[in-house]
Length: 187
Image (cartoon, rainbow, N blue to C red; front, side, top):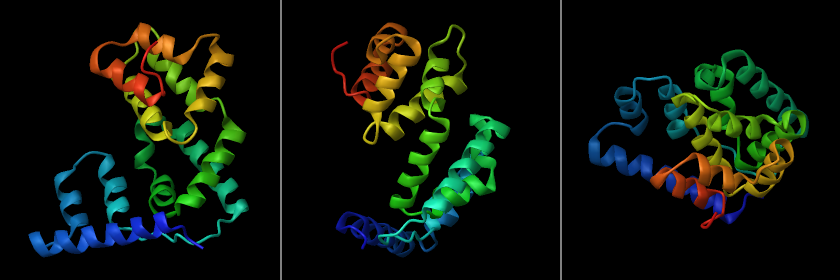
């Protein structure tokens, strides 16, 4: 059975869509498609227009298969073009929260170092905007899910505490935000 939180989220998104259409006389997904012209458009349209199954079941075999599909898409396209892949967009915009958690669990089991590598690449000398964007994406998307595991894995892989590296290699509001997402306020 879907949790109360999942059902509330589904109802809220439905209400937002109806309210938007009432206020502006067209759909939210139409406006997102019109206003956003980069590679993220397809993904964002999928997010605002899809209805997710939020029931109590998620197929383990499908989740494993989709974890492999995500990995292959990232490997083939590179992280900056990942949202151009139709399969990735389909998975991320239509799967339930429970199913996505299983996909990410299997992804981590199969390809566990990826997130830690994305973080480390952002701290390398001469890191480009894409690497720094990847760092932000990992920290925001994983901060309330498995950041403690990522911090442990980072320390094992690179021999340094993630919060110390953040404090040393970043500054200003960006530094403070990353530290807060990592669950650290003083480094």
